[in-house]
Amino acid sequence: MKIMHNAPLNDKNWFQTGGCAQHFAQPTTAQEFVQALTFARQEQLSITLLGQGANVLISDQGIVGFVIQPQINHLIIDRAQGLVTAGAGLGMQEVIDAALDQGLHGLEDFSGIPGSIGGCVYINIHYFEYLLSDFLVYAQVINRATGALETVDKSWFGFGYNESALQSGDYYLVEGTFKLSPVSSEQAWYHKGRRDEIVRHRAKRYPLARTCGSFFRNFRDHESLPLIAGKRVPFVAYYLDKIGVKGALQVGGAVVSYQHANMLVTQQGASSNDVIMLARTMQMRVFEAFGVLIEPECQFLGFSDYPLLKPDHVKFARDNFSSTAP
Image (cartoon, rainbow, N blue to C red; front, side, top):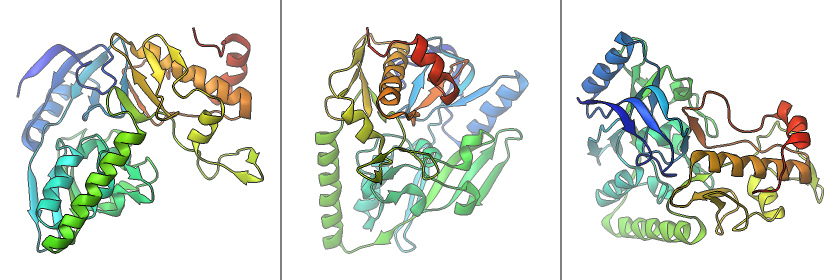
């Protein structure tokens, strides 16, 4: 396994921004993953795990320590049992397509969502009423502190909306096993058509490059919200649509997509700081209009401090931060 130093990361994330990794490796097996963690322990390096970079923003100053991007790409399909085991580095779409080719359906609801299996399990991807945790049955994870490989079941992950136990940083996914439903060849063609329609639908509604997808998360059940026409509206896109930023608000090389108000897109030459300043502007405008603070779904890597506005910063920001983009 090759360990690279001062490795560029702007070509390893969807925003195509950010600095370099102090140290960088792409293990292709569980054993190489163990070697990478051993190196990190010996050198006393902090560890940052990177998937396909579809839901992250990397600091312009790069990432100090050791960035590990697993390339564990094995795929085992047991049609008789309806089980698909996929390495953490495989792309979700690759797994969906292979499963359908073998007459197994279920994951196609996530068609068109970018990301590796590792990243998708980490965030527990969702689309409409489906969560990836609806299909995961067990997985192999690696203990960051010891390098030991462990097999765990679904309950171990403590899945929630955008949540999993992997987010503690104590364990990393090596592979996941999913329970799908066998179908006839005729039914498989139907589900392939449904997959293609979902991809077409996403392409029409959402930007497909230089974005992290939904930048801000929806509000949770326990969070206080203003009543809109007597109803509680948890969808962040509603508030962003109301303040009129879609396709109109831009900071430097970062712009709010004309297709979706909760998706930020970068232009050639954009910086991560452009994205941060655009997101802060959106936060401030929503707060000024509705009195609520929207919070990110995007993961921030390499930042020494949390880069967006926090609830206890809002008053200061309102008094000192202009909500008008440069």
